[in-house]
Image (cartoon, rainbow, N blue to C red):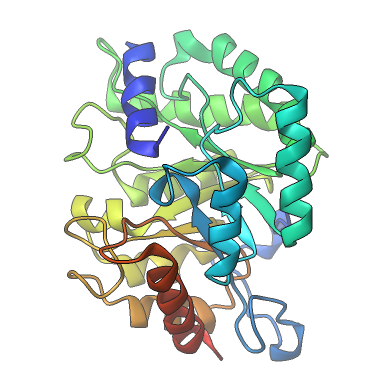
Length: 305
């Protein structure tokens, strides 16, 4: 399942390391880390790189997909519930390959319900309760949370409040565990019915939740389509960002194929000492291994501080 199909399925159904709270200033900005403390993908690069698996090698068995990602030079992989329906033997085989390759599953997704609908709250909590043992089994400590579609009869203010209250309830389930919840926006062209299309509002929601295990997934592809002004929002809210996703507009292809200046994006991430993951979630226009390898090298060069 890819994330676009997941978002549509969610709409149909509806109808790691964290920053302590006092590490954020009033705008959500994190204090700079000393250069000697950087522990990212490469010397001088604070962030780590990952690959969202739905975008590549879809015709291959799961273990071979992991091998291809490793061949491209990546140590981290993001999932969208590819493990749904696996047998115990399949879990063992996949985890053995992951460990053999020295890879991390840094995030997963696929909960059936969203936080914008208060009537779906208990179902959403049940979703996460069922997912947590699987996340522990696959050694993954972050999960993407969706707002879901607009709810007929509810105002924007009411859905915003539901997002805040829903995330607080979810945070109660993971309190003290090594699990982060990452709220994500989706652009209105991909899903005109989706509630949280604005990164700015998403940051407001996370700020109101005020929990160190609740952060924002800043997807530059979606936000460029929705509102733009990417770097300014990143600078003002970097302390709330737990993950960024990388793809260019239009087409969701490699950085540099469209209108987003990703060299400046990665440079800014480095300057801000962003220490979480930057995940490639694009559709390669040529050989995927070669493409991913090239984009990895470019990101590390631009992000070095």
